[in-house]
Structures are given as C-alpha cells and as structure tokens.
Length: 422
Image (cartoon, rainbow, N blue to C red; front, side):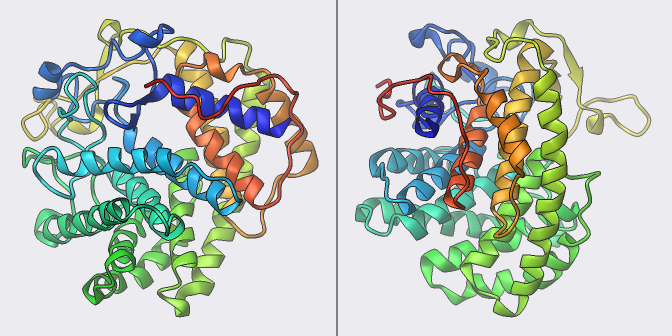
C-alpha cells in the first residue's frame, strides 16, 4: 500500500512537472493538458527584462533547483535501499549542470530555465537554490559511485564551479552576497552574516567541493566557517524556522554529520540536529492540523500568473518611500490565489517537516500522528495535482522509510512509476 502512494507521487513529478527538454522539475503545471502543461511559464522576452521580478517568483519556475536537490536525494535514498533509476538521476543532474553553465557564468546557480528556449533564466538566484543544488549533487556523488564516468565528471564540475563562484563573489567587499547575473544587488542571496539557520550553507558548498575534487583548498575554506557556523546555527529559533528553512537547515547539518570532515564538531552537529528535529515535530503538528481541516481541492489548478494582482516586495522600497527600484530592477510578486496556494503549502510543509524530522537519527512521529498523516494523504489524488509540494513530500516519505518508518495508506493507485512524458 505504501508503494502505491510512492508511485502516485512519482507519477505526478515525472509526468506533470518534469520537462525532458530541459531536464528540470518545474513548480507547477499550468494546464491539465500534457501538451500545454507549461504553456503559461515565462517567455524568454519576459525573462530578459526580469519581469515580473528578477527571481521569477510565482511564475512557475522559481524553485527548479530546490526540486532538483530534493529529487536527487530521494533517488539516492532509493539507491541505498536497493532500488535504482540511474538514468533519471543523470537527467536531473544534467538539469542542474545546465543551470550552472548556460548563462556563461559557471557556478552561478540559476533557479530554472525557460522551457521555450532552454536557456533563458532570471538574474536573481538565492542562497536556497545554491544550497539544495549542492546538497543534491553531493548526494549523487556519494551514492551513485558506479554512474557513467561522464556523469561523475559532471557532478564534480558542478560542485567545483559553484565553490569557485562563491570564493570569488562571496567576500566581505560584496557583503558576502551572491549578487545577480547582471552584476546588480540581489535579494535573499547573503551567504554569511545572515540568519542563524543559514550559517552552514557556505561551508557546506566548500566542503562538498573538497569531497568531489580532493583539493585541500576547499576543505581549508570550509574550515574557516564551519565551527562558527554550527555555533550560530545552535541559536536558530522557531520564529525564523518555518518548514522550508527547517528542512534546509537540517540538510546542511546532515551533510556535515555524514561527510565526517570535522569530527571534533560532530557532537555540535548532532546536538543541533536534535533541536531542529524538535522544532520540526512541533511545526509538523501545526501543519497537520491545518491539513485535516482543509476542505478545498487538493489538486487546484494553477493558471496564468500574468492575470494575478501583484504586490511590491517590501525590502525593495527605499528608506524615504520614494522609490521601488532595487539594484535597477523592480520586484513585483504575483499574489497567488489561496485556492491553489493553500493546499500546495500544506503538502510542501508536511514534506519539509518530515525531511527535518527524519534526517535526525532518533526523532520520529508518534503513532497517532502517523495515522492522522496517512488519512490526510489518502484524500489527495496526486496524479491530478498541479504544484510541486509533493516533491518535498516524497523526499520526506523516503527519508522516513529509510529510517524504518511505516505508514498505512489506502491502496488507490497503480502505475508504472517510471512512466515519463518524453
């Protein structure tokens, strides 16, 4: 029964969200017609002028790298459990490679590529996109050791180029900020001296490059930040840690625990992970209650973001309130309809909390929570879903299963899980 639920989630990801033209997993499909599922994603002309904002927020292609990182780790977990889909893992790896090379600035992790030309990308990435891309590629590097030599070299090049980009760009002179592709100031891109839950992202990038290349320079760079980073991380609190930061914080901690490069810090890493798992358990309970009381359509269709009202991103407003230009750009964010956004946020939130919970070696849901959670998921017809929340949900379920967790789902879906639109 559990496998049928896994199959349903994979079906949605591979048939509704994955593009074989770009090897990327998009944030949503905009039509139930397979041939039109990406019809309303931004055009190259819109992307060229960073419309509606340089991050591509709420357009359907803002989080391709988050999705790719989660899917690569999911495939790595399946490989460790005796299953394998090396070909699909290689395609996801290639999608990340394209996002770090196609724009001509190797190592800059674009959020995604236009399915229209396979090249156009928004200029503002983020710390989150870099983090999940690196974590996913590192997991591929560690687990798919017998992958084709070309794929292994591709993974090595990704991790090295991202580290090289960060070494050059993330400096005190640049306020430790990734910047934009066009050289302008960026939002959500500060890699150091930022929030507590973000303090291990930069050393993780350098340490992953060391693991893939064996070049001591990268381990030395990671060592500059790791000890202070884990100490800062210990002060992360629930005010800043909703579901997405919880999962990403925990994965950065899991990286250092599993990589083993700083054994003297391992007690600190494990202690921080236990605390994050406690926060995740409380957040999971809150989201689960919301999911149980949700009465809308779990599979509400996303439409054309151009028809939505848009609001200004507050951080871009000047101190005197006379300008909304930030680094030469406007950041207008389409306001998602709650009919679509709410169910996706619930599924994504449950998944991210599972990621944060089951990455820890000891934390787990209680019997009552497992039963309630299974009942919620039994209400969702995943092959009809529109958005990418199920990506994180599948990731979390596979982590839980890897830890020996069992869920009792109803038997409701039968499909060849490897069926993919091509």
